[in-house]
Length: 318
Image 1 (cartoon, rainbow, N blue to C red):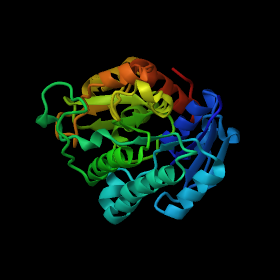
Image 2: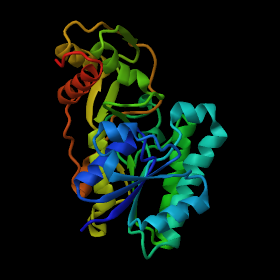
Image 3: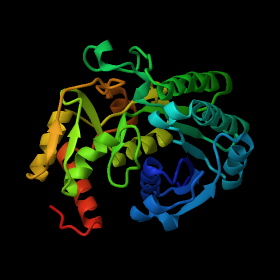
């Protein structure tokens, strides 16, 4: 049965991939975003199929209006200021990340006869830096964010729980790490994208954190996870917050994967620095309840990423 899904942040990097995933599953998609630029949607070949509504999640009346007018039965809430933007604009981060999320839950509460599920982006940023853990981290482990962005996501997990317990709002929050893939915008983890993008275009690049484990999660895998979070039947949910990840590899291992695709890649890797949150997530609950499985291993994901970049810049694929 076709459902209408409102995707907040729906013209951004991850939002565009989620829109494409939902369309492929036969749903109608409305992208709600402050930007109406459909560049990424166009690159993914779905711009003509997505309705775009301009608006700001921090404006409660506007959020309620767009949910009501579009007849959205499901909401995938992705709109947020990410790590660096939150650090530079703390008040705006609180308005967008926490008040904006509250506005989405309020719309779902007000229109509870219409909205069936809110799937929303928490983040692995709710966790502490890697040295605080031993082994894989599951959803019950220490939540102690080291960034304002992570703090806003932690608060959102609490308000989501209250909206479920007090008002019966069906929600599923996901804790992904950092998405990679073609058309990624610059951000706090742009250095991860540059490990692929710089060598793909014949440029040199130096990166720290060489011995630290990164979760390399392709945008299409994260999009799959949000589709499953939005539509997994209520009776199959064992919890409300889920870790989701891609393939685990150190920065140094990722650099070697790039070199296996591009033997002449000029990459320098050092072991300096510590990541702000752990990347080693246990996702067994998401696999069991949501049916989530990683489709893009590191070599497959990097190769397709490199080929897309090279083709766009008039270079031969590898």
